[in-house]
View (cartoon, helix red, strand yellow):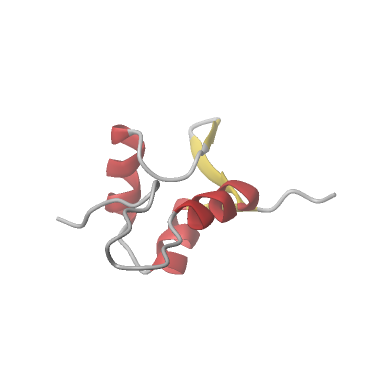
Length: 71
């Protein structure tokens, strides 16, 4: 099975957020798991999918586990 990775720029584009937001999330321990290899940050597709799944909601009154409040 091939493991697919996205870099910070690709994930920021996918979610339409800034790269700085992803950097802040990593610093605060928020968001999907990530790899840091030789100074490069990579996100495994499987971890992105799991994080997105944790953010799914069925109503506006339900707080998602992985949800990060916007500032």
